[in-house]
Amino acid sequence: MADRFVRFFQACRVLPVLIPMFVGSIVSAGNLDAVSSRHLASSLRSGGYQPTDEPAWFVERAENSTLRISVLTQVRYSFSQRRSGFVPPSTEQTVGFSMPRTRIAFDGTIVSSQFNYRISMDFGDAELSRGRGTGSPLTGSTGAPRLLDAYAQYNFIGKREGYYLKFGQFQSVLVTEEAIASEYQLAIDRSLSSEIFGSGYTQGFAVGHVGDSFAWEASITDGGRYLGSRETDNTAFNSVEEADLALGVRVDWKLEGSWDQFQDFTSFQGSNPGSKIGGGFLYQFHGQSNPGGQTPGFIGAVADSTQIFSWSLDYQREGDGWNFFAGYLGQWVDWEVGPATLGAMQNAFVFQGGWFLTDQIEAYARFETFWLDKAFRNGFGTPDGFIHRIGTIGANYYFLPESHAAKFSADVSYTFDSLFALTVGSGDSIGLPDPSTTGFLGLTERETVVRVQLQLAF
Image (cartoon, rainbow, N blue to C red; front, side, top):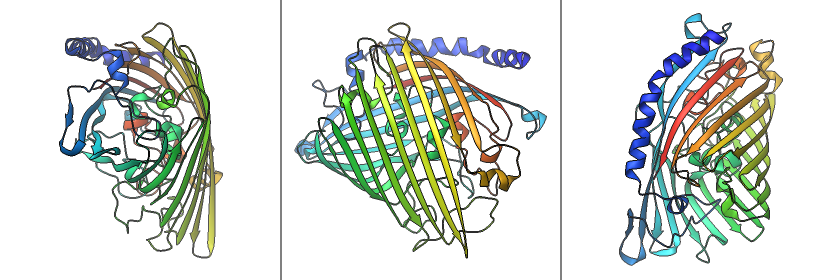
């Protein structure tokens, strides 16, 4: 193992040359400060920040309509070390650069400050379940944009607080890791559990309310991704990926602090204490009017109908320079194939925390474990593969204190159990998300992933 890490660091010798070039460009740009960068953050549910001083890229149009443009870019170097057994010897190590996210977003108001919108697209490969599911894989690494958000929202009293109505394509808020934007994650990317159990982007409408202590959102949509399927972004109404109907709800109870604190996982030094507890539930069914749903690869048949129940429960705590998050995710999938019925139960726990060593250096750690139904293990004939444990440690360096605008991160993840059952089946991967997000290639008993990333948000 030691000599393999030596080869990895030898492959990384180009980083000391590239990083100063990136940092130099950030410093020379130098027109972002800690206060203005905080205005770039998206709120927990609705409305967004209302800055008192509009930035240079703010455009005011006729009849009080406005437009704001924001950009997120992430440059990542990844190293995967896999134990041989399921993989050929030549594929035990994989290294290289990638651009997992290059996102452009347009936000603003339509005629009235109460009526706002968001349209965003991404040119990278980290979003929208690229590569997962039993169908033919989506083409990746092309630089072609894919639509993420395309929704309008009406705030009935003109503020984030109060009732709102949202319609279009938007991110599901069932899982907190997904509700928090990619640039505000604690680690370089979301946990593997979140990528497997989260619903992703969906289409429909939602109503919600943000109060002093409670916030909730209820939605009627075309569903989201589940084990063995992609999410329903930008799909036609008769797509096999779309649910006939999906009903979802999310409730959060703020114990202390402000809602703004929970738009990211980080808590900078000097922050006030804050905590909240929340949970969500999503029910969706397929096959009653649209084509049948996806099925596990080892069944080899299309389900006549499918029902999916997904739920979450989590706790988030922030203090003076430290943070903690704990989440539980569950999912039950029920496939009906002819006269037979197959049910699969999945569960996951995620624990993570971070603490600032200085006002610009943050160390963090994450541990996650999830259980796939034993039917997957038995179906693939593997000795293990239904219990998964993954540990991650890393650090963030914030070039601007109290700002996510420019951030350099590095972390190491290790799987204590086989990922074999996630990466075997007919067609493409059954459940393992695209490596552009997690870095895990799977099809192995053990895997070590090292990631280094520079993030710019402006």
